[in-house]
Structure formats: C-alpha cells, structure tokens
Image (cartoon, rainbow, N blue to C red; front, side, top):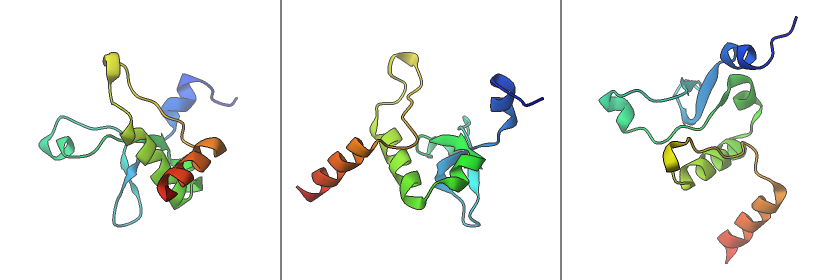
Length: 98
C-alpha cells in the first residue's frame, strides 16, 4: 500500500535548496538555535527528489522569491510556489530590462 498524506511527508527527505554544500549535496531543512544557524538565510525547503529534478535557475528563482517575502508575518510561516508561473517569469524579465 502506498504512503499518502502525513506519512508520505515524513518519509521524504526534506532539504534546503538555498544552501548547497561543496560536495553537491544540500543541507537539511530548517534551522536550529545554534549560533552557526542564526547566520543562515531563511531556508527554502523541498523534498530531495524534487530538488534533483529542478534546474539551477529554477532553484535560484524559488529561493529568491522565498527570501523576498516578509518571513513569519502574523506568526505564520511564509510559503511561495516552488515553480514560478509563466506570467511571473515574463514580469521579472521585463523588470530586469527596464
């Protein structure tokens, strides 16, 4: 029987695509209260399987959009889509040109 829902979510290995290590792997998702982690920027977490499917530009775009939003507004976590819509990509393209 296939896993679904919360069991599937816990079974997946979640990684932070915003912090790639020198060996090509990713840091675990989340931050701790250690001093070393306080310097880390806000994580953009996805399952490892999805991170491997994404191109470098898709990863950069997702991390950039996550960090551009205000974090923890109203005590709630900030979520952004992992893949940008085509309309958003066109707007971003024209903003960079103008």
